[in-house]
Amino acid sequence: MLILQRLSNLSRNLNSFKNIIQKCPKRNESFLSTSKSASTLKTVLKASLIGVSIGFPVGVVITTGYSWYINKEASKTYHLQGKVKEIEILEEKPPVTISRKVISPVDTTDLKLTLFQYQTCPFCCKVRVFLDYYGISYDIVEVDPVLRREISWSSYKKVPILLTQVESGYQPLNDSSMIISLIASHLRDRSQKINDLIEYYPSIAMHDDNQKLKYEIMNKYFLMYKDASLSVENTDNIIEERKWRKWADDVLVHTLSPNVYRTFDEAYQTFNWFSKVGKWEQYFPTWERLIMINVGATAMWMISKRLKKRHNLKDDVRQSLYDEINKWLHAIKIRGSTFMGGEKPNLSDLAVYGILKSIEGCSAFKDALDNTKLSTWYDAMVKEIETHSGSKYLTVK
Image (cartoon, rainbow, N blue to C red; front, side, top):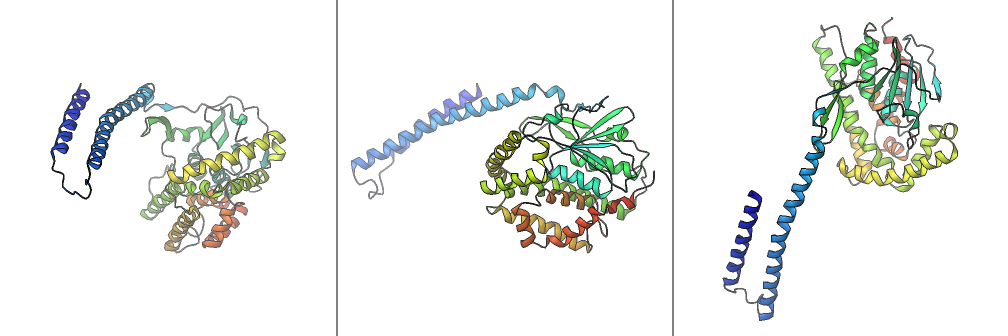
């Protein structure tokens, strides 16, 4: 009723406004010099008034209708708000073919891990870099990014998924940052078991700004310490590490797609590199590989335009990539050390390196090396990862 009353008032106000206009003296004779000009002005004013009187209620109806639809759809899932989604332990390992095994000669963890991944997914690269740095052995299952049959057993339809063997079966771990935090917590104190630690990273249902239900993993940037006697200096370093890990996920990673898929040619070159480094020719039949390359390149070239706008990148998307890299390098320079973690990499170094490694064979990465001072830090990280230098900092079981 309130809306109808306002519309009625609007109509009366518009008629009053029309009468005032008609009664106004016709000054500015140079503009209304003829009766034809006056008639034209009246016609324009009438059309404008009609447009406003029709457009406003139509806009109200559309907006109200859309809001009603969004709220109606959201109401179907309101009962799930705040609910924890349990990640159940599998009794048996999914019957999928292992693509390859990564065997580390310095592994002392006794962890049995299988990583479901895309070779060049930045989040998957983060997990691999973390495991390689600490010298942990793991199996890899390469997932078809179009058909995704290899993860059909999981309700979580993204990668990476790290399947960990525990006493009662196989525990799936989802989300790269949670995977890294959980495994890092276990490595610091191996009395904390994988299937116990997962309780500290609940996946909770919530509605986003568009009232769409999603599951958010709590504490995914937090390591779980039993020892509460941390020094102020260590606490500050932990907070700084957590800040840059989040920046890598929320900011840096979003500069990649608009850059590696900037043009159709770049998108096609990128997917051909994905095929080469991911060994698609070895793991997938030819028809499937061609679909992955051609459909993937076309789709991502189109999507990258929307991503550029969504993440407020500059018209020259390369400059946005350079800006974020320079921000990272400047922060390390302020610390006066080789890495963000000091003389050895911390989890934020591993995260940033993993994300950038995902575009290592693309033109965007080569341009970044030419236009920033990235190579010094990046080359130092390559050495740390390839020598599994993190293994010497692990506690002995």
